[in-house]
Length: 133
Image (cartoon, rainbow, N blue to C red; front, side, top):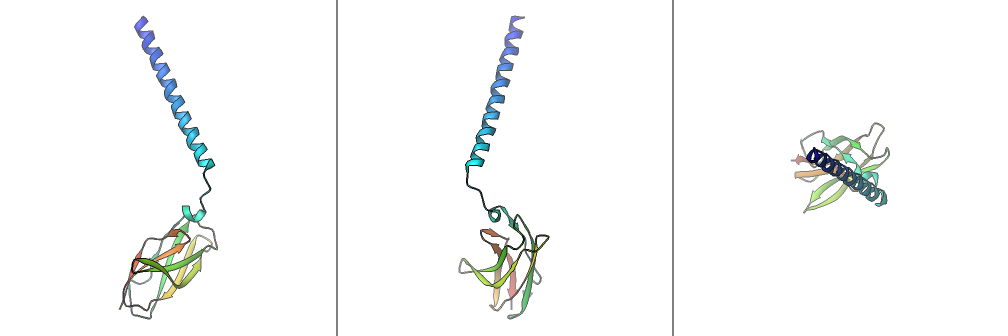
């Protein structure tokens, strides 16, 4: 009988210690989240992109469409292309519309494979490739 009580007591103490540890960890992470600087909405957002055409002739226009998540209506979106390992803005921009969608048309002049993305601050879409002939 004494062994059974000791076992139950040990289990009770262990369960209490585990509960306390979980509560302490939750409180610590809540404190850390509240004391950290607020992240901007664009840092927490996402952007999708789809090119209207995968192959175009030099000088032709391509329409890029997609949706955003976590970005405010009116946020400026810029079309970028990768050149020599760096992302540069092209002459194409638009804003997020009601319903979190956007549409952007740009003329592509440089022949070859264009690696393109949509950017809003520090939030970027996945890269799409358009072949310009």
